[in-house]
Image (tube, rainbow, N blue to C red; front, side, top):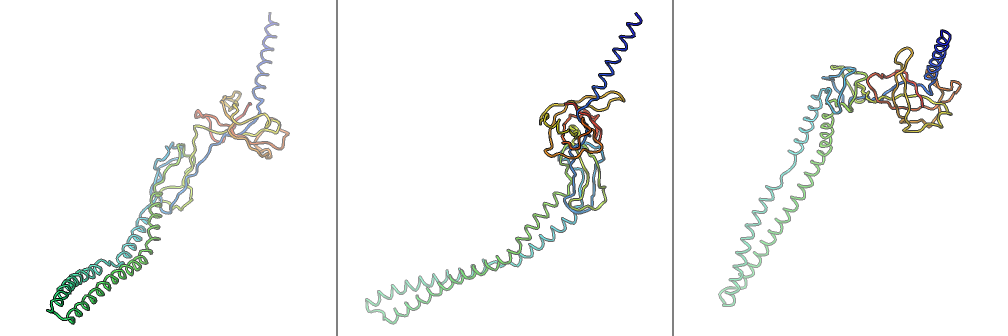
Length: 312
């Protein structure tokens, strides 16, 4: 009975040892990473506030700080004052036109009176009560008044044309200034630091009180709810994997056990590269390998830089 028991224990130990060895025979290895977004300043100025900490969870479009906007506001006010000064240089043609139009109205009254007098004189000539000289004088008077009306009307057109040209020349100088105001207003919008995605602050590069410039990094953020394992496969394995394929990912749980996660292959490199020194592939003799990315839903235990193992 003791011999049978010892034999049974020996067989079970050998089976368990074999299972543990099989479980550790993984197809690929790699490290976890996350798509990182570096948030940079879009304007120059002093950072007045940057209310974030590394590890903070931020929501998309939330305002996390702002950059001093006073210099931009002063610059905008200066440009607006220049535009106002240009408008004051323009000429208002309406008073001059009104004066000429009033003169035309008076001349038209005189013209009507002259025409009426001419008609009366023509009737008197027929009755031998007026002379031809009187009629000729009235015709001359009518002709003079008509010419004066035409001259005034022409003067109105000239005044409007000249004033329009002069004003257009002055106001044309304001068009670039208007665009400058639009540009400044756009910069003012960017003095508020808006967070671009839902995620966790990974690294904070700047502090309140510092001076920043366009393109200077303020912080980096990444969505840790979904994490990526970047692993490497050999050319032999490369022919047997595909996008969207479900795989098993293992990470260390204890010194001898692993925690399993389901994963999906989301990217496969189309170019081979030399095996990274820190990566052990299934075939350690292979010099060239292909990188793949496996997406895993993070339960909060997976961290950037951790090692993971893969079974296809």
